[in-house]
Amino acid sequence: MVNVTNTRRPAVKRRAIIMMMVLAVFVAACDSGGATGGGPVTTGEVPGTSGPATSRPSTTSSTAPTGGQSVDIYLVKDASYAVAVTRTVPATPDAPGNAIRALIEGPTDAETDEGLSTAIPSDTLLLGIVIEDGLATIDLGQDFEAGGGSLAMLSRLAQTVYTLTQFPTVAAVQFKLDGRPITVFSGEGILLEKPVTRGEYASVLPLVPIPSGATPRWVQADLPSMAGDDTRRATVVLVADDDNLNVRTAPGVDNPVLGMFAPGIVVSTSHNTTPVGNERWREVATPAGFGWVNERYLAAVVEASTFAADGRVGDTLDEMAGIMVALSDLTPVVSWRGLYVSHHDDPVRFGNLVRLMTDPTTYVWPSKAFDVNDPDFAGEITGRTFAEENAVSFVSAYLDTDTVITFNEPIEAGNGRLAEYAIPFELAGFNYVGIYDPGDNPEYGGLDWTIWYVSFDYEDGVPVVVGLTLDQWSP
Image 1 (cartoon, rainbow, N blue to C red):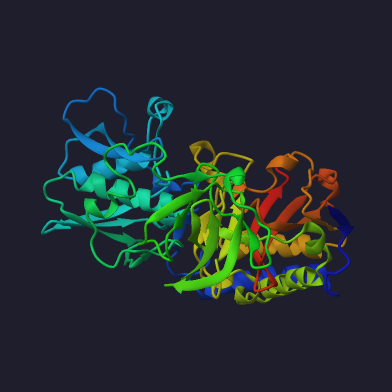
Image 2: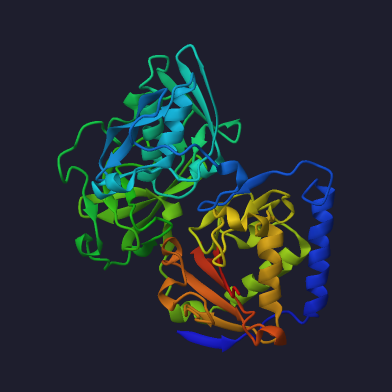
């Protein structure tokens, strides 16, 4: 581990840059119809949070109220097959919509204790359902696509399709996200070019139990030796600790699953890669022979000492700060995967890097100071753009004169995170730089500190930014 004072920041007047940046963000918001302009404002929700638009009817499996009706929702049992669970919903013509709302609510505590779970993010929004000639077109919020892991993505599609096709008026389902038809779902590259039926997911999330061990799950001890000049190592990343990375017999999600890698393990890969849609797939070694995984979920293994000594890492940080000040395109310094941002919650992926710095979309960002779902704090929560919430804070911390830089070393400050929780699990397999601004407002006695962790991967031997994780003082 290395801990050094940052002596590499550009020779600029920090306070002038920050003021220019704040002004530029304000002007950009006005010009693009943002929160301070006269145009429309789009307010999204970061996974793990909810704004006023996310409130839904509370749905449980308790005794039916007068006028209620029973519907089935499909949950996941022991991470291997789907089961129908009955819910009571209001007796209205919108039974399919009520069923989906109940599905989004997920399992009860008792059901969770029985091994039931859901792959659908709890803050997914149902924007609408249209049923015509046996086809249900369902429109869901962008959060439905959040997260990673092909099994999780396919399971949430299966749960939705199973729940809708219980109704005799629905034979197939077509998906939209935020009003836009989708042909490729998630970073897994799942094809949704045509309506899907129950049969599409029979092998992924069957409606009956499957024999134990039918799809092996490999942990570190199961994997073959990594010796040999024709192999290289990679860490399984961006997969939640309760999920797995599917290994397939050939590139692409349409091919059979050979087995599953546990998250966080180091695997041996060959030099063989192939593009599938907008994704890249890489050949990997398994106990069952060679298979293929989506390269999005692999990080190059680079020794910590090599990473700390790599001057290009500092150059990339300098360039990213400059891009943020200029409100320019982040693509040159960020991974092809996109940018994963964590604010005291699970990482959220931002894919459109070209316009991210000027995007007027506002988000309700999580905070450790209060629960964003608590109505008592609703007045203290305001929607902020990516640039307002992240870029200003990052540049201010990075360019401060007393900022401390660390390499792969978590920082404990004030009432911040404990070291073991500094980096989200999904980003734990990447090398990272810690940027610690101790704070200098005498009113707070140095407690107005900010920490940014910048996660890096190496793509074609070049360091690129994958994630930004924020920790900061809260009164």
